Length: 145
Image (cartoon, rainbow, N blue to C red; front, side, top):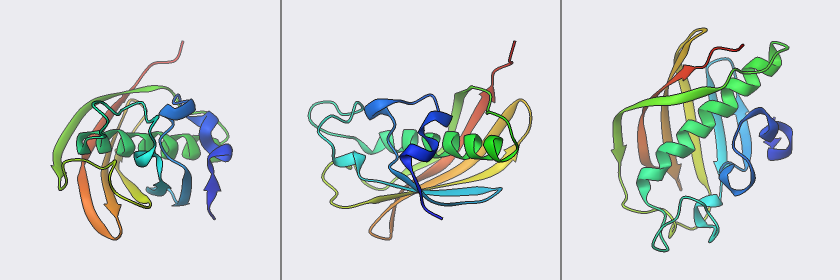
């Protein structure tokens, strides 16, 4: 059930190199598993001082949340309302930087709460089977006109 970026990229507001995920490995009503190699890209827009710091893995988790919301909305015959990341909680970073990690990152997000106006997810990012980042994120959905 792997979905390439071309299948879901238009469901989220992130475009070009800012669309950090490469593929969706699996998803269901409550969770998503995505993979990427963008952490090693020289043109990664989150890099600074020639590094990609582990703190940016929160954005990878947030993008997995956005893709999940888009896929859920599409499956229901609609489109996801835009949202704003409003909080990060219990963030645990186990490495200082990620641009030097070879291979894929596995990005997981699990929907903890979801309603018309907000979502809350737990996310985790793994490299070679080891946890390198985790936390919770909340999104407030904007009202459509």
